[in-house]
Each structure stands twice: as structure tokens, then as C-alpha cells.
Length: 462
Image (cartoon, rainbow, N blue to C red; front, side, top):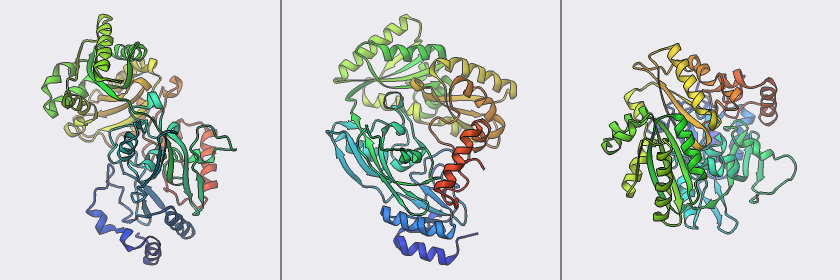
């Protein structure tokens, strides 16, 4: 059932008619990764924290469900909305308020994209300290709400480690302003930290104070074929320990992913390396490009002598480097075999080879037609697993999830590394989380959102 007209009129008065999108207008727009994102058929685009506060206060009093949305790049259904709810899009909160180059901090609105923050920081020789493929669309508010990770997490941590402070609007419209810009800040319970990773279920993050890091400078990039996953893990460890080498990215791909992508993109020059069992994309930084390349080549030569490398090529120009990253970030597998399933897990790096070998055997025993493809962040053990078959398997998530997650707890890993819970992983959370944790999650939700209006049905198991 659509939202009654009187509620639409009242909410329109708060944000103005120019900031309202109805079902017809939304039908002409890209809903993002999940086609269900625009299910509510009504989007509000507030221009300030004050307007967000008024919207939430009204919706709380009227018991209207609110679904916050950022760049709509999430993969777990966390931005899905339904008729009778209201989408609150934060794209107009897109101002970078300040960049302090000496303190290495930035204060920005929730609607600022990662790419925009990165570009502004680069003007001061700084970096956001986080990066991933969705950088042009993903917004800071969404990144905070899902505790995004990405390529640089092994050096700078996830978003949780990048956030110094934040401003959030609670379900009743109250505004929590904790925008501290220092790393040492002990002032009682860090209540604002609850909103990091909460996926909009406790309130709406509107402004963020980010810690910045020095920019990486010149880089050298190599695509490396390795014979086994154990060799990939040993290579990553060696590169991180090598004298004079500063790895800035250590990305892993299964050979079938690399081969499929090279074929789809017409990158024949990398076909031989893509034929390896696993492929590592290694990037290292230095003050000068020549120094970075020399250090990377020397480390790869030593790794080759140790039988860790089957073949490698170092990018000779920006075009080659971009092609290597396309192999990592393009999802040709989904185009060639649509209807696959994604799982986002973390495993202690030393345990990766054994875990993936056992997972392969579990999948084969369960259904010999299943194929496993992976890409991931090798240095922190975060793997993105795609399971598919000649026919779509998209309706088999809960059937296959236990095969993926069964031993993660015992290994000290996680079934949800950097993409959040949303709708997709609620059942897995309910199955694997301890009773005390689940009880505390429900109690926190009830305390901050007693009427259950914030992102209804997401994250917290019923």
C-alpha cells in the first residue's frame, strides 16, 4: 500500500517539492545494485541535517518506515525499500566542509562520494586511507553505515578506523553531534560508534569527521601468476616484509576469474598469467616510480627463486596498470554466468589455503555442477566468493550459505567481512551469532528506535 496522500504532503512541505521523487520519476532512474531499492516509490532528498531531523520526527510520530540511501552500491539488500515506506536519500548532503592538512582530517556530509573526498584530499598530498571499486558512486554515509573495507584496509583499517567522529539523527529527530577531530577522545561511552556498521537501523549519519593519511606517491604494479593459494599467501607475506618495499595493494583472484575477465575484455597480453591457479595484483609505492618498480621487481625475482611465482609482468605504463586493475574489478563472470551468488567472508590469512580447499570439497560433494570464483584482499584475508553454475543459482543462498560459513567462527573469521548484513545475511547472523550478542542488538535497537521505523526488517534478526 502506498503512503497516504496526507503524509506525502506533510513530508513534501519539509523538504520542498523539488526534493521529492515519486514512483514515476524513480522508474526512470537507476536503482543501483538492487532493483528493489526504489520499491517504496517515494524518495525525499533533504538538504540539511535539520531537514533530516524534521523528516524523522514526522515519520516516527506517524510510524512510517524510513530507508536511508547513499550511492546504492550495497550488495546485501540493505537499501531495499517497500511500498508504504519512505526513502531518505542523502545525495544533497554533499559538501566537504573542511580539510585540515596539518591535522590530517576532513569533515564532510554523508552524501559526499569517496572519489570526491579522495580528490579533495589529494590536493593536500593526502588520501582518504580507503579505496574500492565503487569509489565513484559510494558515499561516505553509506560507507560508515556498512563499515566499508576495501583495498587499503590491511594498512589503514576499515572505515571504523578512519572515522574520528560523526553526526547522526535519531529515529525521533534528535541530533547526536559527536564530530570530534582527534584520535584520543575518552568522554564516556562512545555512543556514536554504534552507528558505524548499523546500516541505518539506529538513525541516519549526516556528517563525518575522517582521518586522512599521506598519499602514496608513485607506484609500480605487477600481475603475478602463482601455482597455489599457499604460494599466494607466502608471496603476500614476503612482499610486506621486503626491505625498501611499501605494498599499497595486494589483491587476489582465482585463475578462472582472471581468465574469464581477460577473455571478456580482450586482454590477450595477460592470458598466460591468467592461466595460473591464482593471480595476485601487487602494487607498491615509493617517492619515485623508478624506485618502486626496482624494489617490486627485486622482490618478485626473489619470490620466483623460492618457487612462489610462476609468471609475472610489471606494468610499463598507465594503460597497462589500468588493464590489470580492470581484471581485478570487472565482473565478467556475472555476465557470462548470470544468477550467481556472492559471499563476503574474512579468514585469518594463514588459514586461507586450508579453508578454501575444504570449501571446494564441500561444494563438489554437495553439487558437482557448482563453480567457485574468487577475488579478494589477500593481505587481510577478505575473500569475495562467487558460486554459480550453468543455470542460475540465485534462489539457493540459504542452501549454500552453511557450506561457506560453517567453519569461519572456529577459524576466527567472519561471514560478513565488508558488505554488511542487510536482508541477505539476517538468517546467517541469527544462526551464527551468540545469544548474548543477538539480545544486546535487539535491546540497542529498541532503545534507539522503539517504534521500529529505521530501515525496517534489516540487519537485526526478528
